[in-house]
Length: 234
Image (cartoon, rainbow, N blue to C red; front, side):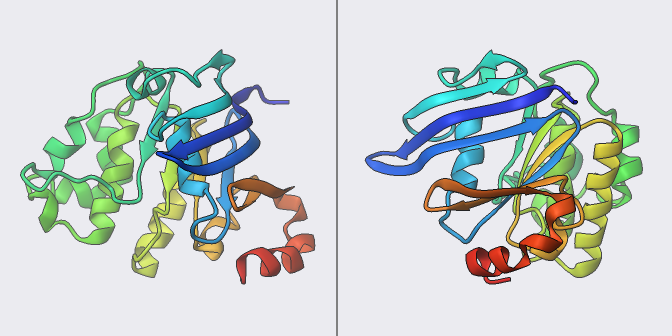
């Protein structure tokens, strides 16, 4: 049995007075790919943001490799080995692709070097000197993922990384996640694109109205088709 990397217990989170998460419980083991499924507004992105300390008030427990993180500020959560790739990507227009790549600080040893990153994302090597906004949507998404690999993070929180991208780019991102899993990374995916996520994840959590309502393993996927149609419309 792999050790727990992330354990969330009775997590509640707010934006101002809006109570978004209502007692979320989930576990992610070392080396797993776990996917959070649900309709828009179900609370999946808020769960990722709550893990890294980017929501308002939080209650409950968030343990990262056994260390309680519920009261830590975001910069200290990152130093526990967490890399967050938000849906909006956050590429700086005034910086080149390589400058964007080099921007985040190192949070732990063992991060990927430029040569390793460029071997994984050859497009980024070709566009290293290009301004961030001159990159295609797919290249910006690759850059957003690559940027956190340099930092030494070992748990990657990836929010809707396939959204709006051409099928060939989506396929490349799927290959990247498989490569990262083979290298021992732990990944939490928030995905609307079920066809993208389904073959990648070891386990799935289904969210609705800020709660986990179902969970199942990859081996149980076929048996949960009806339930997924009810919750997701897929």
